[in-house]
Length: 447
Ligand code: SF4
Ligand code: SF4
Image (cartoon, rainbow, N blue to C red; front, side, top):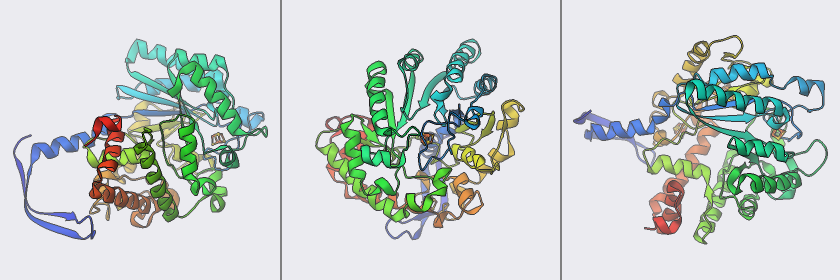
C-alpha cells in the first residue's frame, strides 16, 4: 500500500495530563503505519503457537497458592487424573493440525513428570507424526517443581531437547513458606539439588524459574532477585499471584492491594537496574516485554497481554481427559466447577469444531482494545492487552469493568513508571533497557 492517510481530525491522549487532544489535518504515510501495525499484530498469523498439555492433576507438593488445585499422587483420586496414552494420541493429532509452522508444547500439571509414561509416549509419538506429515518446528517445555527428577528422565530431556520451566519463590525460608512438599521435606533443598543435576546433564541454561509473588515475599523482592542472581539465573519475571485454585481459598492472607505490588515493582526494578550497572546482566522479563512493545514495533508473542487476547488463538490447553480450554485459567476455573470456557474434547470433536468456535470468536471480539470503551481512548492502548477470563472471574463479564479492574490499575501504573523513566532519558537507564530489548551486553548498546 502506498500514499498518505489524510484525515481531518485525530484524537490522541496527552501523556502527562491524560486529557484527550484533537489534532487537525493529520497526514500520515500509510505504508509506514501499515508496516508497523502488521509487525505489531504478527502474532495473529501464528494460530495457535502455544499448546499446553496437562499430563496429570496430581502433585508431590501442595503449594498454598496452587492454581491447579493439585491432588495427592498416591490416592485413587490422584491416579485417576493422569492423562491416558489414548487421550495423548488424540491431543497430539489435534495439535499437529494447527496452522502455525512453529509451535511450543508445554507439559503441565500438577507435576507432569509423575505421569512419565504418557510424557515419553507423547513426545515420541508427536515427533514421529510430525516427521511424517507436518514438518513443524516443535519446542518442548516441561513445567516441573524439580522436587523429584532422576537421571533417566533428564537423559530423555536431553535426547529430545526438552527445556525445564520451574518455580523459585526466593531464599530457602521464603520459598518453603508457601511451596509445601507433601512428604514434609524442604522444597527448596530438593529444588536446589535437582537444579544442579539438571544443569550438569542438560546445560547451565536448561532450567528457568518463575517466582509467585505473595504477601510472603512482596516486601523481600530484593532478596528474591539476589537469590536468582546467586544461583546464576540471568533474569526474573515479577509475577504476582493469581486468584485461581487453592489461591482463591487463602486469598486474604496471600494477596495484597495492587498499589503495594506497584510500589514493590518500582523498588525492585531500581535494584535490578543498579545490578546491571554494576556489570551483571540480569533482566526483569515483564519490563523487557513492555519496553519491547513501547520502543519497537514488534509483537512479543506474550499471550496474556494481547489485543485481541491470546485465548485460543495464541495459546490453548488440553486437560487430562482431553477437554480443551482457551487458557490455563479457564481450565483452573473448570477444576473448581465452572466449565463456561470449555471449547470441546479431543476424543469427541474435530479440530474445526474446537477452534472455529463461537466461544473463541466471542473472547477475541471482547478483547480488542480498539473497540472497548476507555481502552479505545487510553494512551497505553497500543502496548496493553486484555484478559477476558480474568474479567469473567472478577465480575461475571468477559469485557469486564477494565478501568476499575486491578489488571488496568497495575498496567496503567507500570506504563506510567516506564514512560517517566524513558522521558528522563538517563543514558545509564536507557542503556540497560536497550540491552534487555536486544539481548546484548550494556557495552554493546551504550549511547
Ligand atoms: S508444584 Fe505446582 S502443581 Fe504442584 S502444588 Fe505447587 S503450584 Fe501446584
Ligand atoms: S486496560 Fe487500562 S491501561 Fe490497558 S488500555 Fe485499557 S484503560 Fe488503558
